[in-house]
Every structure is written in C-alpha cells, then in structure tokens.
Image 1 (tube, one colour):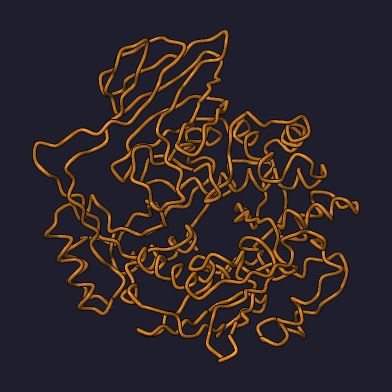
Image 2: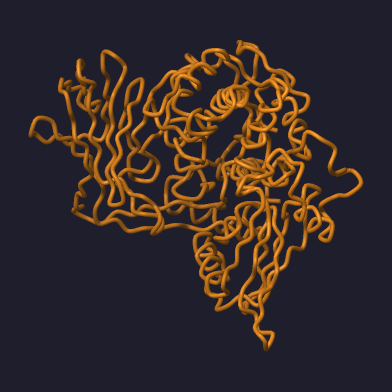
Length: 534
C-alpha cells in the first residue's frame, strides 16, 4: 500500500467514483453526444485502422448549414463545408507526455482498474487513444517533475505496469474548414441546421461513405492532440441509427424490441465513457454501432416507437445492458470477461429453450467437460449459425507476430521474445470462458487473462475455445488450432439467440428475462439510477 504521505503530496484528498447518476442529474439526459469520427488527424494505431482524410458536411436539399466558429464567435451560412486536417510546424518542439497506469482491451476492465488506482489516492482518467488506458489525471499531475515523482513512488511500492509515454512534437494537427472557396482555421466548430438533419461524407484511403445524421454536429479537440466530430442527437433518434445495425433489419419483431430496450438502456448507462474527451459515446463496437439515419427501416422504427422510454432495470438501477452476436450456447458472467464486481443479473445460462445441459452438475471449468460441450451442436438457440461453432488454424509465425504486436502495445517487458514454445489454457470459468491462457516464450511466461486471451491473437472469435497443437512428423510445434464457439464476449443477450426465441413465440419481455434474470422493464423516470460504482 502506498504511504499516506505519498497520497497527501500528490493529491491532497481522495478523489473516487462517488457520484451516483440518475436522470435528474442531467440537464437533458435524452440528448446524447456521440463521437462519430473519434480521432481526426491522429496517426494510425495500426495498419488496419481506417484514417479519415476529409469530411464533407452538407445540408439537405431545402436547408442550409449554420457554421459557428466557437473560438471567435464567427457565424457563416452555407450549403456545404469541407473539413480537412493540416499540420502546423512548431517554432520549437513540444513534449506530449502521459503517465499510463495500465492498458486494457475494454472499457469495463479499464474502469475497474481506474477504481483500484483511486483507492490508492491517485486521481485518474479513462481514455481511448487506441486501446483503453488509465492515465494519471493530466490536470492533477501537470508537470514532468510531478509525473516522474509519482511514477517513482509507484515503482518503489512494487507497481510494474505504469510507464511514461513521451513524444516530441515538431508539428500539430490543425483543422481547416473550406467554405465557398475560402479557408478558415478553427479548432472548435459547431454545425446546425433548421431541420436538424445533416449529411456527412467520410473519406479515407480505403473507402468513402455518406451518412445522414439527426441533430447537430460539433468538431472539437480531444485528449490525444487530434479532433473528434461529435453528433449531438436526441436519444430516440440515436436509436434509429443503432438498432438496424446491431440486430439487423430482418430480425423477428420481438427480437428487435428486446434489442431496442437494451440499446436505450446501454446508452444511458454508459454516458461516462468519454468524459476525458468531452463527449459521451462512440459510434463503433466499443459502444454501439451507430450510423445515423441512413439505414432506418419501418420495422426498426416501429420497435423504437413502441418501446419509447422503456429501459431495463435491476433494483431501480439501469443494468449493464450487454449483448453480443453469438455466445456459443452458454452466456458468460460479467467477471468471466472483465475485471470488476459481478452483476447479479448476468449469470451463466445455457442458451436453449430446452434442458440440454446442467451447468450445476457439469461445470465447463473442467477441460474435458468443456470439450464435450463444444462438440454439441443441436438444440441451442444459435444452432445453425455459422459462428456458433468454429475452428481456426494458425501457424506459429503468425501467432508470434500477433503476440509480439499485442505485447508492444502494452509496453510489456517480454515484447521482444523470439518464439512461442507452448500455449495452454490453465483456468476456465463455470461458463467455459478462458480466465488464464499461459504462453511460454523463449524469454519467459506471458499470462493472458480473460478477454486479453482473445485480444492477443487473431484467430479466436471469443474466449470460449480450446487449443490443439499442430506438430510435424518430428514433433516440432508448427502452430495451434483454435476450436470454439460464439462471436464476442457472450455476456447478456445473444442476438442470434433472441432470433430463435422470438421465432418460437417469446415476447421481448420474456427474452430479456431469460438473458437478464431478476430484471424488469420500466419507463425511464427521475428515480432510476443511471450508474453508480460497484
């Protein structure tokens, strides 16, 4: 434990996650702020990341844009604005530095980690420059000296994960807005229209796509020295851009209704995710996929209207409304995948309308029992789906590449290992999810816990898998076959599972009660708590 004197020097008071959020806390909780382009002007995180080069913002045919440059209170009217990022050379190099306390694949585990650091009296912020990270708060620890003293104190007390991420900047990104042939250089821009409809074309080297968004736009700086395009949008309008992409437009109507209630609940419970960047949600799978009004359908709109204002609660608090494509026949608990407290309503449930497996008698934590379960293919809600069961081979050189890349991202001391010597699942949960995957390298052992076992390697689509080594005739290790089931974390609702339940006549209420036992559907009201630390 860090000494009390250390806490006083660096913080002066214990700053924790004490707030309890309810609908009454928010001036207008039914308006959301969604980052639809999160890191405009940032360097690519890896070769797969799509970098937006240009944004074209247009009004609809019988409307116009009102563009306000917030740093100078200048207002322009136009039909179209082109937004580009240019790089401004600095007269003298500048230092960009953050004290990274830890790095994680998911927000959920990053939040649990942030709560841990705050119990030590360290003020933190959760950020997502690529992977989710916990930083020492830049406002509380603003100078290189203070950050280094904090890092030294952590190291003396035995904490090995914190490190300083330092970059020397010779140039910085700057926003250029082109309107009617004239360039404007402003880093905070607000775009509104009379009809609350705006078109955005996003162009990258890989593709170009145009989306129609309800509400307004704001272009603003973020925590990483780049910029975010934020869509300010009413909650029910936001759902019109989420539900078609998350559940699919051909889903049974009761499955769509269940998804809609979850999507509404998820959005309101997760408004804190991007506090460090001054918006609330993202538009990707790290939150919920959101593509504006381009793909709306009458069927999904009907489900949104029918369930308007309905949320899923447990003891008067919004639930963690988690869902995934396919769970492989058994749902996971919260702590099977992420660090943090268990949620009583997120239990391991065999995803079948019948009694085909008794988890209380045949726990999937046993390796042999787990393999028998994965061999089963019939009788589940997801039976017949292509990703219900899967098998993927990977050569040793590819596994080496995957792990090396993962360890480098995490500043791991074994990142320069030469080769993997063996891999083994050494701990499973009752639902069969991998809790610890042990990897022996030529430089030492790497332990991958929970969702990190999936993040570290390309083949697995979930943490519900086992490994089969591949040898040549001389018993030399050539690679591994990953044999598993499901796609995604497997916690909460299975989207394909809900398809089957709806098709056999289950209502949205029954579907949600199956995947979230002990919860209830109720209209949003001021007494419902959005979120509180667990």
